[in-house]
Image 1 (cartoon, rainbow, N blue to C red):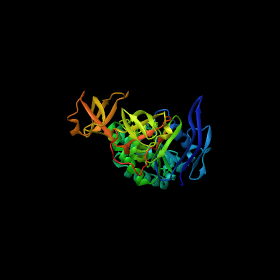
Image 2 (image 1 turned 60 degrees about the horizontal axis):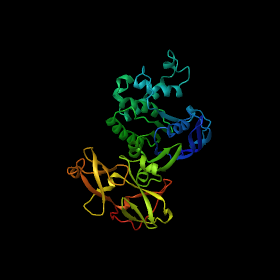
Image 3 (image 1 turned 90 degrees about the horizontal axis):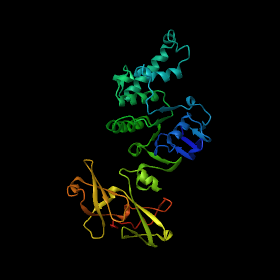
Image 4 (image 1 turned 90 degrees about the vertical axis):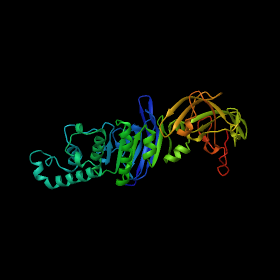
Length: 383
């Protein structure tokens, strides 16, 4: 397989545009995640790739071959659904065997009475494939159980196993972890990542959960309103979002956005404080500055932003302070250590600032712009 390519995909439901001329190349063997809010078109794009949904226009290439008009069964892609889609009356072993029987046994060989006798060798080979897959997924001791006798994580692994036994060219996963509780989701994230490395297959994963996207993906595509806003490695998208919507969606807690006026070609003002940079193209215009909570820090400097704590979030290893500051409409969130939090109670006043190297600048259209010479950025506090 030489990869997957979706070219100029358009899709509308009635008057609602769901996918807008989407281009996406998925490399062979990579773990790519489509992430975005509900209604952004990510599941529709996955279904078009699987062949379960037809596009209004555009082409789908798998392994260099045009699969646009090819039916789902012949695309050799395995789909893992949110609801598991296991047969409740069959055991785990029988659930995993079913797609193999449909693919590799003739109608006569599947016949209940004579089938087992005339296809004994084939059935033994298929059963061995199920056993090997179950060993990889640590399901060997659950093969004789039915889905109702399994935990959520075990059912998810059984659904994965049913897809794996076919040896597909790629796995398509539509929010497979969303039905699990928080602790199990964290566990299954690591299991899926390890499984991807072990198989070396192409994984295309759909989720609205940014934690899943950031922790498991080789690359992720951030989607909104039927468009891919940014495609890149998780660290790149987190640290260098191309659009303010990407910056606000990726990251928890949400990035702090400050709106400020450009008063000079080399200076902007935020909360009464001045920041130096190249702003000559933004004169007399609004510009937004994004600072993530972990990049704000407490300070005793006189040159700072003043705030009042209105809410404290205790996450054990970290505390998040929700702060109100004069002339800033939205509350600011900053991360502090448990030791720092000891002296920070609700209604306490304190000062904070940030380093210019962490500041993200966005123009009035929401696109990120560079205002510093990257070779001259220092750790100087600029608030």
